[in-house]
Amino acid sequence: TGVKATKVWDDKGNTLAHPAVTLTLTGTVDGTTVVTKTATIAAEATGDALSVLFENVPEKYNGTEISYAVSEAEVAGYTGDVTGDATSGFTVTNTASTSSIRVTKAWEDKGNANMAHPAVTLTLTGTAGTETVVTKTFDIAADATGDALSTTFENMPEKYNGTDVSYALTESSVEGYTVSYSGNKTSGFTATNTIDTITTTDETGVKATKVWDDKGNTLA
Image 1 (cartoon, rainbow, N blue to C red):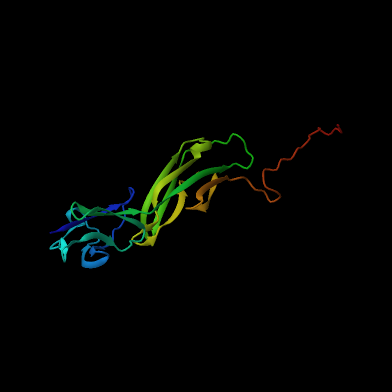
Image 2 (image 1 turned 45 degrees about the horizontal axis):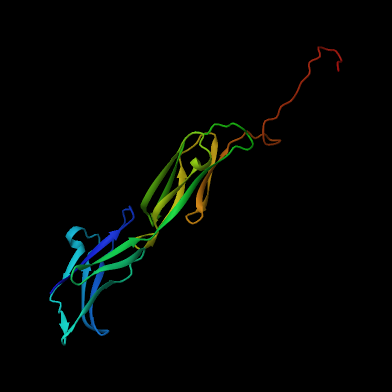
């Protein structure tokens, strides 16, 4: 008798690295292990290579039916779940651990009313070491306000090949503004554009002086 086991990777729409994993088939009778078999699925396996067949598996032990289960070691960055049985086959599904990350655009016009705000693109990039794992973009329309200045990126992976994914927010350059970034993946990121203003040696702003030309007369 053979027992089939299939590996499924659920990356939540991301393209992630898949390590080699070992599936273990265990047969028990009254709580005692009587059969143990292992099979390894290679890293980055696809298609038929994601399934294994445990062959020559006994149905009974000393006249008692053997109960079978499949397990695997924990895979960093994934949550494991096993379904099925020895007759229909087992499926071991690893679902990527992900987060929701909010990004927000803020304009700081320093009290200047009715400033025009151009369209901008925010880019959220996730990296693991030197490798870029995921990139998401958010296009914000010109003169957007309120909720149109924010979005939430769903299913952002927490790990890549066992390494924590770090996130950073960037945006396209906006003439006349200086951008600064704040926040993190837990609290959300904000890109703030602060208007560039003219600065004199005396004070911030533009100095204006009034001159009276009385044509040689002394006038009030």
